[in-house]
Amino acid sequence: MILAMWSGPRNLSTAMMRSFAQRADTQVWDEPFYAAYLAATGLKHPMRDEVIAHGIADPAEVARKCLAAPQQPHRVFYQKHMTHHMLEGMDLSWIDKVTNAFLIRSPERVLASYVKKHEDVKAEDIGLRMQRVLFDRSADRLGKAPPVIDSTAVRENPERALTALCNAAGMAFDPAMLSWKAGPAPEDGIWGSHWYDAIWKSTGFAPPEAGNPQLPEHLRRVADETRDDYEYLRKHSLT
Image (tube, rainbow, N blue to C red):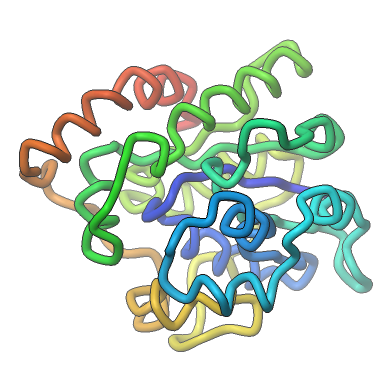
């Protein structure tokens, strides 16, 4: 099985990747298209040069590798994808050949976390519109909604949420997914030293968050731009 998990940034996506990496049957890949995204856009992200040097800048080559069978002894190839990395003009046909799932989080919480690491943010940077596009593409192919999981549900009850996700993806839940060792992991992208301080301190999913954060006016506008897309996806959430 090739399982592509589509998320925006600051969305529990690294914790979810860490969770799947605990399975003995699963190989994981952290943000396969990040280098291609930076090379194509010229954006000045933290550690830009290192990301490109350690990644694959040709999106066609990335797509081919995304369709490769998992390495033995694994039978599942879990890929942590950022939806905003899929730029206009990129060939999306490869996603029709994999199992797609979607991890969502309220735009207010995404934005409050995002600006702690990268102050300049626009609606397209948090990926909800492209997440909806990819969801609709997958739903049209399947004739039904693909799996959608809200990060709030994961934090409220990880075992219940992960069981629902695994069942919807056609695999059994593994209790090993509920915890991991603190610190860096071999599967982390080179950018982990900038972005992953919280996950490196963790040994499992964080507890639920209380309420929505208060955002300044410019971030509230971004949240308002993306709210319809979030609510559209949330109505299909497994939990």
